[in-house]
Length: 260
Image (cartoon, rainbow, N blue to C red):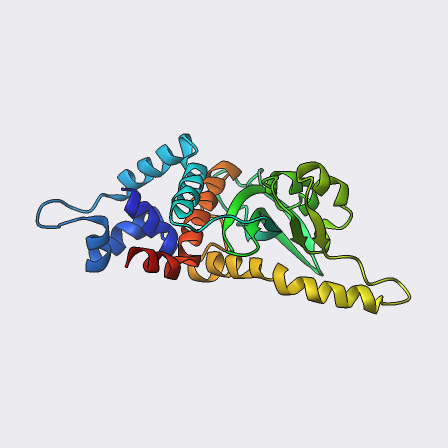
């Protein structure tokens, strides 16, 4: 059942969708250990009950911690540099549902000139290995900087972030006393552009941009661009499990070398 749950995250499948996919795909059945000559594929109700069990015991976060501990045992360690960032995960804004209203735990926010409705996935990512060591879910209208303390593990020597974390040097120092603040600085003003600060931000981006690789795997490879369930808790559990699988994907080549 756990392998079936992982298939759901990898291929962005619903409960009935993964049941159908298992009947259609021999490779998926082999991965899940299902032999149709002996037993049928678990139906969507069974898959749903197993998912609720994981959510009830908050096992998504446990999966992320367990995967990181496993990687550490293989010599793939979290280092002392952390990149902090957040990405928007959309939620249905339609009111054409049973309650005739939008999900009350989701909120809207403006990015640029466009409005979005949903939640935010905040992550703390290792600057060297591109591994997610911390993840957090909030409504979309929560500012990135407000959850910064929860994204740091405390042993950092450098912290990178975009301009959403401007002015958080004291917060960084309180959470990680040895850390230097390498977040982007403001360079645009009403009447001028500070070219020196702009150039510094560009150099910082060579490291900070690594977090986009993580989001690329999460959204483009695994298709986690929209929430599938109502409420933050269910979607947070899915996010944490997905982060664990993203970490395995990011270091898959190193893992193969350790196994060979």
